[in-house]
Length: 198
Ligand SMILES: O=C(O)CCC(=O)C(=O)O
Ligand SMILES: [Fe+2]
Image 1: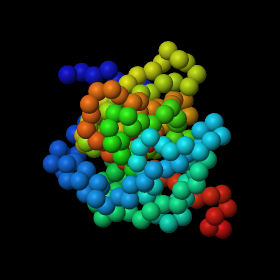
Image 2: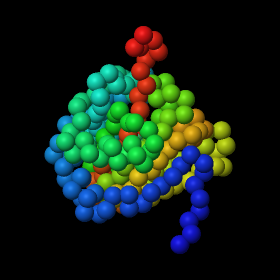
Image 3: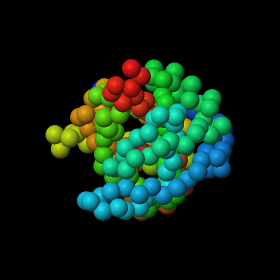
Image 4: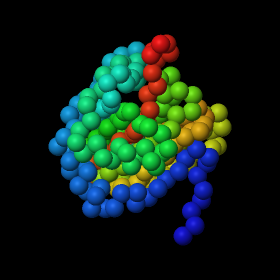
């Protein structure tokens, strides 16, 4: 069936992983990832983020997120081979991934863009979804009439590139529907700080 094309900079590949492969990856990540509550700063106050997370990456890919610095944990075995496939799909050598576990419909992520300076001006982000399908909401930063939602099913890969972060915000809203736990992996390429390697 024909689907409405997404705005430039967004591309959804459903069934990027076969269901069996996606099931196995979900189970492996549940075991291998050190899931923790990240504290973020909101309106100047520290709050627990409503989900479990783990920042994973190569050494030197420390990352500031919601004004909190995270040092990456090493890559779990389940991601070692997957990483190369993500790189091939995205056309970028990813060096880090933010893993999020949404335990139920109350876990969520608020409106933001992945526009941290460490990612450079037009980052490529590859977002792999596993487990329960959740709705991903996108809205334009300047034009409130431009917005859309996407269902992100088990095994799907959402690629965001170009102006997707500079011009748009995204969120993973809460839902009152019963939903299975969901893991999302957003692979990123953190650039070395200016002056590094000289
Ligand atoms: O869970 C999702 O699909 C979104 C995650 C996200 O936006 C992020 O990690 O920056
Ligand atoms: Fe994001």
